[in-house]
Image (cartoon, rainbow, N blue to C red; front, side, top):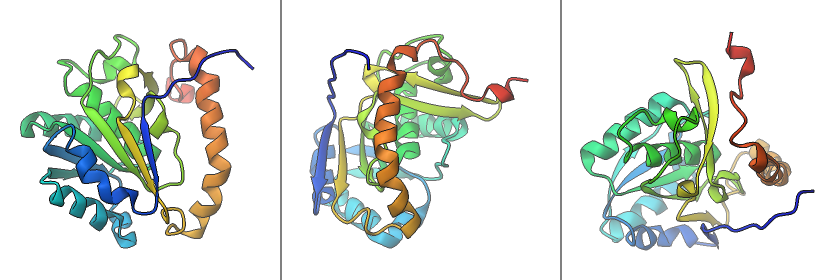
Length: 221
């Protein structure tokens, strides 16, 4: 094992009803936000209702952008950047798992940057700023909620690259009690096994982050 020091600036909330305070937490950063998620299936579990009610109670205006896939795509990130700039969004709230959080992080670093956000993933530049990003998890643990990185697939370029920067840490992440219980059986079984591997994978990859290139070498042609 490599020697090192671990520091994580993300505030983690967990327990029963912690998501009910998301509005007050978001209000510390902005009054108008992007609510980013994958499918609308999480509405069936009551999480959408609790989050949006908390935002409304805190006087937070939110614009929704759904559609994140299990491997988040650049096309939706471009859409998110455009929405944030046009609507003068001040904060991004991701509701979902690792893919949604990665997508939100990519949008966050793309908004203040004048060029193509994928420049960061192609290691042409290093992010210098980001919109503040937070998350309410729909999984027991995704890894991305406490890391400084993201992986985005660029469909047109047929590339899947990662990017890491201290600017990509979340401001906060929330995991309410009952999130795991509310999920289908398959996801309940998968998450406990995935969590230590995800955390270990992040630790193992740190020394290689700036040297690794495509995560899809077979697509390079």
